[in-house]
Image 1 (cartoon, protein in one colour):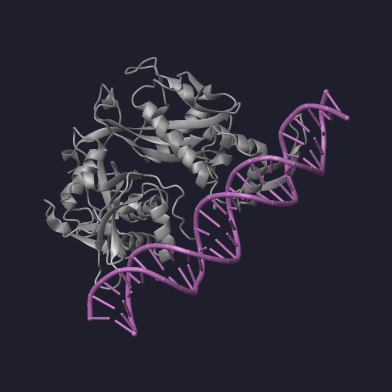
Image 2 (spheres, chains in turn orange, brown, purple, green):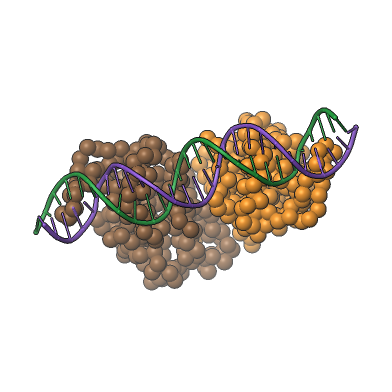
Amino acid sequence: MASRHLRVTVTADLVILTIRSGELHVLLVERANEPFRGSAALPGGFMRGSESLDETAARELVEETGVDPGALHLEQVGVYSAPDRDPRDPRVITCAYLAIAPDLPVPTAGGDARAARWVPVEDAVGLAFDHDEILRDAVEQARDKLQHTTVATAFCGPEFTIGELREVYQAVWGIALDKPNFHRKVTDADGFIEPTGGKRSSGNGRPAALYRAGKAESLVPPMSRPR
Amino acid sequence: MASRHLRVTVTADLVILTIRSGELHVLLVERANEPFRGSAALPGGFMRGSESLDETAARELVEETGVDPGALHLEQVGVYSAPDRDPRDPRVITCAYLAIAPDLPVPTAGGDARAARWVPVEDAVGLAFDHDEILRDAVEQARDKLQHTTVATAFCGPEFTIGELREVYQAVWGIALDKPNFHRKVTDADGFIEPTGGKRSSGNGRPAALYRAGKAESLVPPMSRPR
DNA sequence: CCAAAAGTGTTACGACTACACCCATGA
DNA sequence: TCATGGGTGTAGTCGTAACACTTTTGG
């Protein structure tokens, strides 16, 4: 029965985003094998026999970043299955995943030998396969999610200031936001952030109160992204 | 190389939604084969060698509804790949698609022998495989899309009244909307609907002006869904 | 005329914007 | 005391909700 049908190989590719020095970065690897040997590509890997694709993506995420998977945000973006997307084997399809991570110490800590590095998303072009398109779609999805959900906190560490959270929005959206209004918005939003009681001084200026991520997932009313 | 990796069978399953007598309906088929023989299920089919999954979904949509695929809205929902989702073959994964159709004359016109019927989404439970979950996710996606995009027009025919469009929102969201405010909202929104100049009388009351779908895809500001 | 659905006007309220202003800290 | 980032106050504007009201048809 099942053998009557086409069987294909399935991969999970990861768009791992983070903020580094106020700019949105994506984790890229250099391909060690054909096809596209030497090109930059999104990290990813093949689905294994006993796991779901979500588990494949979570496993790859740990391999690439070395971080506890429960700490990071991970969600599906979509399936890419054009017959010619892999020049060698027309029957490899991939499911893209969006991962959101805080600024991690070193990305090369994975068990994989491929050289991994953070690249500003604007510079990430000319990737292998259809990864340019996947990256665009994932970044767009991240921009939307920041509006309607509380995932922005996934870009921050366990404790963060409102200024840091604002920098997340500014980096992902590529615009400047009004400080006073942003402050009110996130403190008023129910379940977005909770004060820890601590303070942190950035060297300059008045120390900022520290917050942790709240329990809410959706944001009503949403953060409004200027047009 | 590719043969070193797991190969799986891939299907595209369709959540085809429409409005019938003011209620949101989904197209279900009765399974003719094991597993889940005799159970209600979402229509779907296997990916073929030379097509993308999006093409698989479009082909199945035509087979089920007999309608020109360009006329209907079709988009990905997500991949469902739990290892035990198919009790016979652990390596069948599916990509769910959301299709939005106007009220179609007869759904049974497909080339397939399976009995197809429209079922109110609230009554569509106990489906085969993980189709209950897929249906829930697809309906939720449709509800979101109605807020931020102009897809609601895909539920209507080529010409429709504002009252019909309002019934779409009411059926999908399951709530009542204020007629005057809805009217202003959709006529003010740029590119949502365009007047055709015609009028249609429903027998009772003043005849309504007719509109066709406009060119805009996204809706700013969005239709606000009460909470 | 009456019922019913389409469509317009109006007012109150809430959210967002812009920007003035105060607070707390390091140099 | 000055510079810097954190945080509060406030007035104008825009979009929405609620609902009274007018318009246009069929019976």
